[in-house]
Amino acid sequence: MPDGDGGGTLASSVTPQPASTAPKDRDPPPSFDGSQPHLFKQFERDVSLWQWESDVPKVKHAAKLLRGLSGSARAAADEVPLEVIQSEEGVKAIMTRLREHYLPHLESAMPRAFEAAIYGDARKSRESIQDYLIRMDRAFKELKDESITLPETVKGYIIYRQASLTSVQEDHHMDSWRL
Image 1 (tube, rainbow, N blue to C red):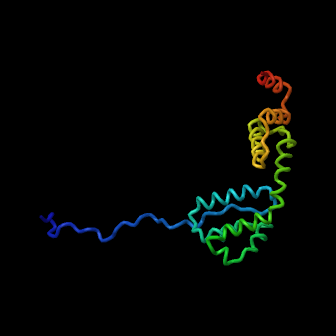
Image 2 (spheres, one colour):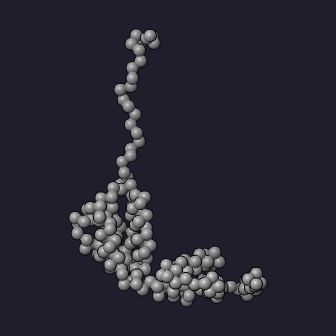
Image 3 (cartoon, rainbow, N blue to C red):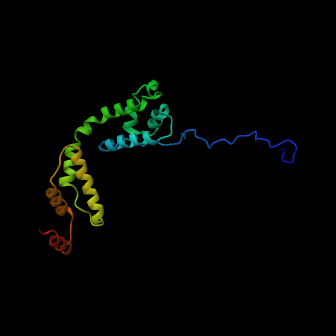
């Protein structure tokens, strides 16, 4: 039966379009200039996370990564041929080249990690205990990443010695730490 207009209902000739699912080409990669080579491991991790979460097509990852580099890191990465950079293997090639370039610094990571954890800076006057403990935990983690694990009692003693506690704080903590 017609519904009053004489011809029944007309289906819409325009179908709704879904929201754009095109990849966003604005996802910036991590940057690195090589001025602090000991941060290369963190940069590698950041690149891996960026690749995992990025909506940028994989074939463009290396070009984007290259634009995020500067200084000695850019100079080393510029040695990768353009054809490789324009492929899906580009990021791997750039990271391999950077790893080769910074390998001497990575090999000296253990002594630096040891120095930071054992003989590092004492707690600064404006540094909170919480910030100090976070910094020390990070130093012990870096040491562990270099295959050196300290017993908890040794870590505790190092933290205590470098905490720069006042005599009141020291008395309070010594009472609570006694067995």
